[in-house]
Image 1 (cartoon, rainbow, N blue to C red):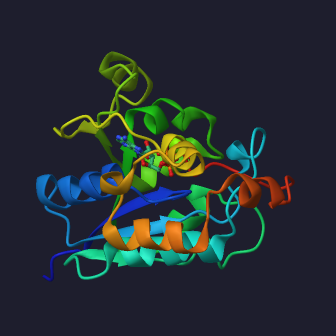
Image 2: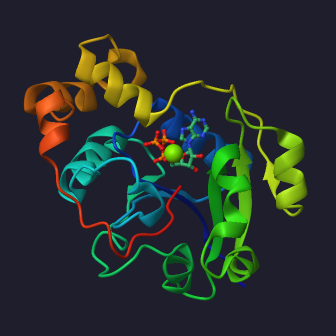
Length: 211
Ligand code: ATP
Ligand code: MG
């Protein structure tokens, strides 16, 4: 019998994609013996629209493409940005063939929020949950919330896309927190300058999870 394909799913807003996302992906690939890790930029992440506008999907996809280019086992997957309506992880999981083994790769912060996701019991029924540490969040809380989670060992990296956006807007150095291609792209196009952030308008309706 053929072995089932083991696919890791690393979803996020990726605004921008940074080295903790990439390190989590590679950690999952190796530690869990995955065949591939799909980086899935979120379409309309409804849990993120209260406090800020989100960079248009096309730009987030471009940065994700640049970040993973040439890394064996890493793939870009556009199913969430191409889907209309809110981004629900359960819809993403159910869009894969039943014979494919799926594993969600989540940071501690996303893992503790899992019970707030749409149809989350079905999410954990369909996919294994692989969790990587994130500073500021407790392992004990993760285990309590998602007892079935497999905790992967990884150097905890105290960075976030939020802090990188702020650094880029303020002209502070963040070059080595993203890949060279992503850094050049952000700087060349002024993605996170104060004015470009202020100008963005986002449809606040119909937005869901994606960590
Ligand atoms: P933002 O600050 O905009 O929320 P973020 O850095 O948290 O961005 P997301 O796109 O929200 O990045 O996260 C996507 C996934 O990557 C989530 O599962 C999240 O837990 C994980 N992740 C992001 N940053 C880290 C980090 N520093 N360590 C571990 N996991 C991380
Ligand atoms: Mg986040």
